[in-house]
Image 1 (cartoon, rainbow, N blue to C red):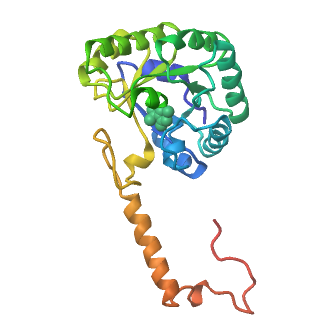
Image 2: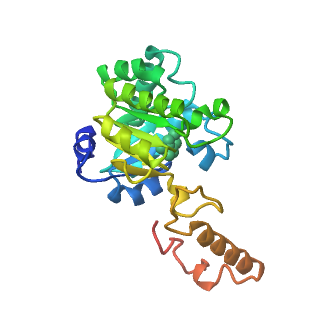
Image 3: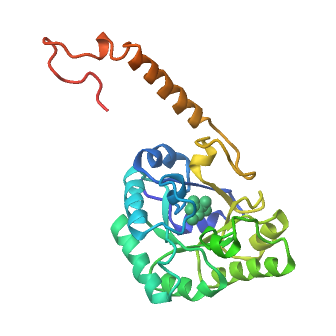
Length: 274
Ligand code: KIV
Ligand code: NA
């Protein structure tokens, strides 16, 4: 199957809502692939999988390793890999070199950067040289240390103007889509109308052209989720129940049973192939 491309994503604006979720490994990517237009290998992997407090500590190597796994597991969705903090802000040349490395080593189709207004030059530089760029405006998690926490954006006039300026700058610089994170509905709507590319919202209302969530939040992997998340599953409960039952069976000597045990007459092959 041919993967979705930047053109499919661009054409969806104003027509069909774009479905995007994060993935960090091959089996999850494989389960999600049939249903998603875009799969984002988010630097949220640092918090979701590696237990970091923020995304600031995420490295190029982490993004490449997880990007490779997601590419192996998916076949039809367009795959976008986040550039980690420190890999693109210095100047457009550094951004291009690191983005090109991510694309070559993972085979992903595009990269994403948290694009303050200053980043427009890097966006244009990369797009002109063959790298599709997804922008990310509003709440920018890599700026957590400047903001003093993860807070929704656009509560003051100055902040609203700043977010709108970031969005317009990235759009004019040629990004193919942009994540709009943590803004009130009216601002999300204004941005979506003001830019030519599709907006993909997270905590940014139904007014955006598409939606993205961290998959682990959406499937109920954690005991706490932010206001903007809807839980579609209880994977945490499911895993807890499975592990509890296994532990009880091992301690009660009920596992392994006869069915799960090799005998001298068995040929040594496992019954089930994975
Ligand atoms: O890192 C991430 O998962 C993201 C999305 C939630 C947009 O940037
Ligand atoms: Na991210």
